[in-house]
Image (tube, rainbow, N blue to C red):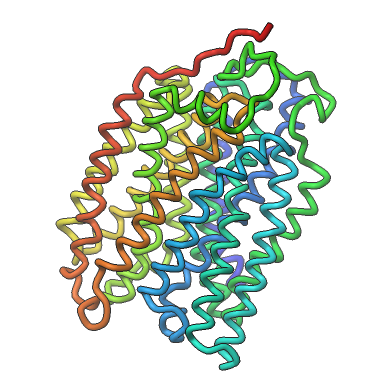
Length: 465
């Protein structure tokens, strides 16, 4: 069996199993025709794969951080700072990109995301090649990677905003729990591509191709998106319908970004959601971006680190499907109870890792934590942002919520870059105790906040006169 097929086969089989399970789940019948469902699939599926490849072009740097360190290109401390600046840019970019997405539409901005990220990945590959050839000194290479990765993250920030903006008019509130599960699956595929496929590329091709391959894939899907994606059912020849979210009954003009933000932050539920998602951003990337470095530095490499990408993908898919199912079919399309259950799992996971750093169970526990945090992220950034922002304001709503995710990411990047061990000290697992110790209080805060959303539902707007 070819090596590439050996890499791909497990995830294809898993996706096939998930597809069978999802088709067997109880359906919520809202009267959509089979033709409408088919056209909706061809709208969100290429959009979702574009988002997955955006993830590949976002996490390829962290996936190959140990290799870049071994080549004396990017040290652990330098990686933390590069990732921190990029995450901070992503976190504040919503101030511009959320309103732009509401103005231009999600179709236009996903094209901008794919094209811009492809260009930045090409340039990062060029910078790595010049550094390897000695034509770019170390300081200049780190500066170039910091600037280019930050620019990449700016374009990346259009991704989640665009996917939510496009999907909001196509899915009723009662259907969005499972859509949130699909959102988690797409994230998981992107992580699989980034962590397993980009490391596979690094083993068989020169390091610059770690950045060039996702750039090429993004350009392919940019071309497909031009022909397939439409912002609303009406633009695809179907009737637009009431989605029963926060825009329901609002027949007035679309509000400006400041007015939308003021309206959103006047809702206590939004304040809780952005605070929870700050915690989610911290925890998600504390696990995903630092476990491989931990395993590499301590020599505790094994099955989990060798198959990190596919295990993250499996965990994310299961977390997304579980979260979506219990939201729509157990908790009557409420998102708060789902976040509470999954955050309880994050608290438990942080406690276990704290006491098992030197044992294989720690690796499996962080995989379980990934399942939980991807499920939360799909529910809140991918689904609650539609519900409480409404289809009219989905861009600003998602931008605000997803922005706080990456402010949390930036916080953990700068924190861990400064407190985690380096040099010979990094070889001792016990010296990594600050890693799970920093996760535990964040998980506890997230759990406490999630319980406050237990009965939260979107409020419909009165019709404008």
